[in-house]
Image (cartoon, rainbow, N blue to C red; front, side):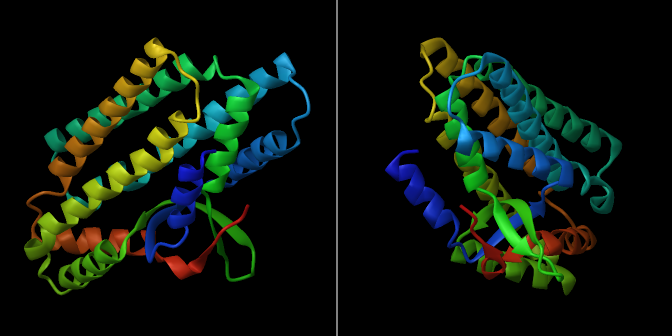
Length: 253
C-alpha cells in the first residue's frame, strides 16, 4: 500500500459520519479467512491461491450485491416507484453487477500472490467496526461523509420528517452522487492502483469502473429526483439507521 493510500485510509477513519451497513455473518467469516491467509502467507501454493482468489471474488460480489440491495433495490417499495422505473433500476443494478463480475474474472485470475495479499489487506483495512449492545465488534462497510454533507443530511432528514422533503430533494441527490463517487474511489480505483496491470487489462478495469459509475448515477438521478414530501419522508426513515455517527466506529488493524 502506498503512503498516499495509507493517508487516505487514515482520513477515512476520521469522518464525522458514515453511510454504512452490517456485513453478513458468513461474509465476515470469509473476510477473516482471507485476512489470516494474507497475514501469514509464507510461500506460494497454486492450489491454495486458486481457493483464495475464488473466495476473494465471492466476498467482493456479496458486498457489491448487498450494496445494490440496500441502497437501490430495497428503497423501491417505500418510495413507490412505478413499474417502468423499477425495471430501469433493476437493469442498471444488473449492469453494475455484471461489470464488476467481468472485472474480477478478467483481472482476478492474473493476480500474483503479493497483489492478492495487498488487495485483501486493503479491503480489511476499510472495514468499520462498531460494538453491539453486548460488546461484540460488528463489521460494517461504509462510505465517509465530510462535515458539510453530514450537516446537510441531518437537515434533509429533519425537513423530510417535518413534511418539507420536496424542498431538499435535490440536495439529497447531490449527497448520494458524492457518496457513490467517493465509494468508487475507495473501493475500486485505489485498490486497482495496487495492481501491475498491462495496457489491455488497465483498459478493461477502466471500462468496468466507468460502466459502474454511469449506471449508479443513472439510478440515483432517476430514483431520487423530484420526489414528493411523502416519498422523502419514507426515504428519510429508511436512511436514518444507515447514517451513523463516526464516533461509534473503531478501526481494527
